[in-house]
Image: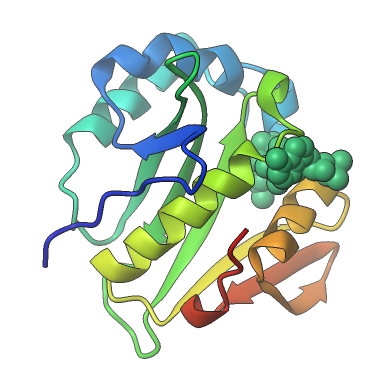
Length: 176
Ligand SMILES: CC(C)(COP(=O)(O)OP(=O)(O)OC[C@H]1O[C@@H](n2cnc3c(N)ncnc32)[C@H](O)[C@@H]1OP(=O)(O)O)[C@@H](O)C(=O)NCCC(=O)NCCS
């Protein structure tokens, strides 16, 4: 199956594979503690950011048991302002599920870029990995994250221990 090319509806952002030249833009936000405030793990160091970008740039488009990250480029500025990605389990289960993640540069949040990027990204991974369902989770106090999931049309599956888990059946993906 040929991978789909994720084009955003308005063309403000482009979702594309990482390239090795993205390290500086990527580190500019992944190195900020604010970006990891609601997530496990530390802000990235320069070597870790470089290793992640190179690994993603070299990864096979249909590999399983790995994280498939994509750079989100702001077309007007030709810079990477965030990334989206999905965890594809090693084995294909029934239903086939992928788990979504996203993080954006705080300087470019609050403008709908993450929403636009995910609306472009989700149909491509659903197609490329023949997914039946997409999940995503976040902490209860991460309002920007769960509001984004709800804007996408995701449904609250359950909430426990201050964590919310959302699911999306591909037909429910909300368009602008
Ligand atoms: C989660 C995250 C990606 C959300 O980013 P975001 O920019 O708020 O998300 P959106 O693209 O949906 O933008 C929505 C905001 O832009 C505003 N907006 C402005 N112009 C808009 C437009 N043209 N279209 C849509 N929304 C627009 C909306 O009103 C909304 O603001 P509000 O939440 O104050 O109501 C971001 O907060 C982030 O990267 N956080 C750190 C990492 C993280 O926690 N990731 C999730 C881990 S589970």
